Amino acid sequence: MPSSTLSIVSAEGPLLDRILDSTHEIWHDGLSRPAYGRYNAAQLKTPWGRAHLRRTALVDGDTVLASAKLYELCAALDGRRVRVIGIGALFTQPEQRGRGHARLLVERILERATHQGFAVALLFSEIGDEYYRRLGFTTIRTTDLMLRVLEPGDRGAPAIGVRAGDDRDLGAIAAMGRERAALYRFHLERDPDLIQYGLSKKRLLAGLGQAGARQVEFFVAEEGASPVAYVVVSVRSEVEWVLEECGDRDISGARVGAILQTLLAREPSERRRTIVARLPPGFLPSQLTIADTRPTAEVLMVRPLEPGAEAVKLLAAGDVLYWHADLF
Image (tube, rainbow, N blue to C red; front, side, top):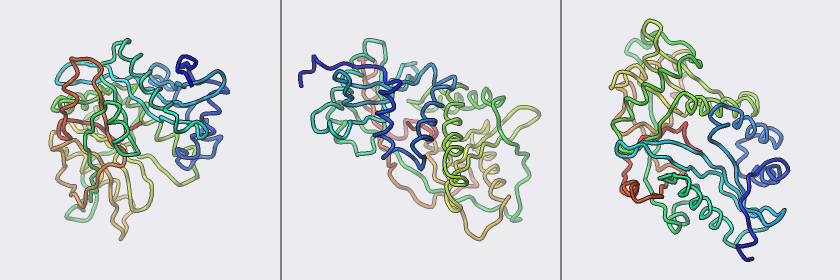
């Protein structure tokens, strides 16, 4: 099919419904098809989603060939602010596979992003890195940590005040993040709207799914009226949690560890929970120990879109801060 007959369009209305009908089978996360549609629509209604998230499609007339979600992000690369285009949910309609449509869509996305001033493209591959390496992307090897929380010596909760977090804490959380992120060559610029978007996604997934299947824990420790540490945890089962993100004004992260001890002490159990996390390199609170490691299922891949961003190809895992909460 000649590429001149194809076009890139915004995926909305009936077109989006056809895409979601197809993608639901592999990315439903336990949601019914109606709930899956509400989950996607609600993300676009958040302040960050309205401004920075959209879905695009490669079409031939009324026929959908391939589609993707686009995330307009800002990041720091070696101290320089750069615009990042994130590509997620790349999908070829089943009846259109094997014809190069996904590759063409990615090429068109990158061409347009370059003209719009984006310096870096970023994606997470669930199919390994070979396909995207052929499209000019470079792999950054990342690792999931299996963490155990050490019990306090007196087997009780540590003496730290913890409360549920809310939107009033997001400014302080963003400030904590900026201070820690400055230690790394590459990281997202996580403003309050982006942090809220990540929280909203997790809460929507829990709220729209089967009752009790997921739970989101957002807690802060504060001194006076100001948050000084926080954690966001997704509870997926009785024995495994996911530490989506955390922060602490103390470089050691001791209060993060104490918050996790407090959360676990609420429901004493003989079964010790494992916490899956992607902690910043060099950051491990003393109350945590690494029980195991494994390569991340989602392979982080980057591609420079301008000469000034070529350094992104040389990044190692220790150069990058990227929270589990920011996966797309």
